[in-house]
Length: 581
Image (cartoon, rainbow, N blue to C red; front, side, top):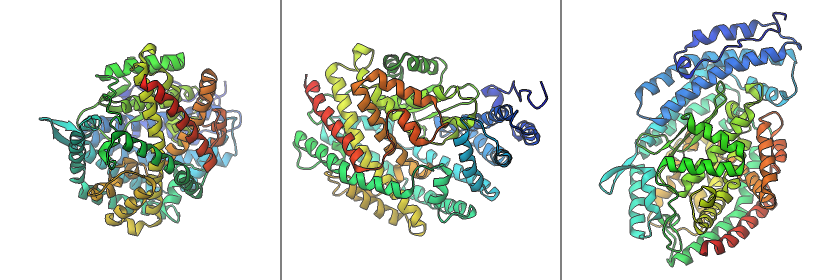
């Protein structure tokens, strides 16, 4: 074997504990060898495999450090370690990565399945500016500060300190006064951080504006669009999607909310009336402990597909699930993919409600995506670790919510009686309808922010814009006397602060997932098989082709939305009979 075809770094697979001790001097020799390696058509696969091994170490170190800051936002040692990485390893690794991208692009070489990743590299190489590296590191520090602010928010509830996630259990209480008290208590605590978040927001916005300017982009939206590697649709397509939602989904949401108001027998729906059972049935309590949730989810996944069940059991058995709720947890939930072990990690904070079940199904869909695509030879092809085609990554997660829904009952090892399972499925479908208008508010707000960055520096203008969008898209809910709570909703959406413009993905993915679900209603096994095949493609084909492989179509139009909404409303009507017993 010639020296140019020998495997590069075949033993480069440090353990987590070893990797956490690495600094730049550990990475540098590998990058130096990759940069000087004489590249040819004959040894391209060897070189790409070596690059993947090194890049996998960088990504895994970054991910483990991020995980440590989210599972305990008060862990100062974890924070310091992550910030040291951002200041030392991150900028040097990004510079080295840029040199390798340029080397590959200059060679003109490619391999089957690398066409899309190489296209993405061109976008990344065009966007790269060395002067932005410290700014990008600072941006991540500001994001960590946001997580720390939110993670520390607790209230006194029924004689003890409770997280804001826990207090939401009271939103299911049949006593309207209890729900209102809990809702107001939570909002008061969030409003106490209003000024701190406003100040952080100004720093974030100024930093992002500078990053875009350094990259020669007209505004941050243009920068972020390219950073997210969005080649398949434009900001104008997003606006088209917003308009279609307003035309089709907002009226459907009005129907849902009006039906709820009538069933509850109230003069007007208030914000604390939106989660409780409208017919005054006992709240759904699917589980009483995280272990019970995990056990039920395992049984459900084995029914969806035995391989998915096996994947989930691997996470369970190897400590790669952290879903217990406690103080100083980052907001939200996520699944992180790891390169070296080819196994993902799921983070959430569960308290015993149906939405927790949906969250675990969702994040598990991401984990199955990570498992399926980990067989691809190069990191650059893997969506879950290279963070592109996030729209399809969310098809994987939202699709799993729906593909798993027939198995929520105890007869499948799940959580509910047949009547309760029907209620849970109705709530899920109604939430999906709710989600699209909410997504449109979040996404349209961000378009406004980065089209008007000077105005958006004033939080009062942000409040006004959010309020205008909210009242436009979210009907039949009475917020009178609660205007401050309504207009500051943008402060509490962590994606706006920590993942800018990462939200339309969910809306587009939900439309794809509902098309997969429509196929499953006719042929569950066939729909699951197509879904799984699409996951295994990773990012080796264009986004629209991934949708097609899964049995769906990437779409922004009102007619596709209307078909999805009509299907959901039809199934809700059928499930109402089952829920009544």
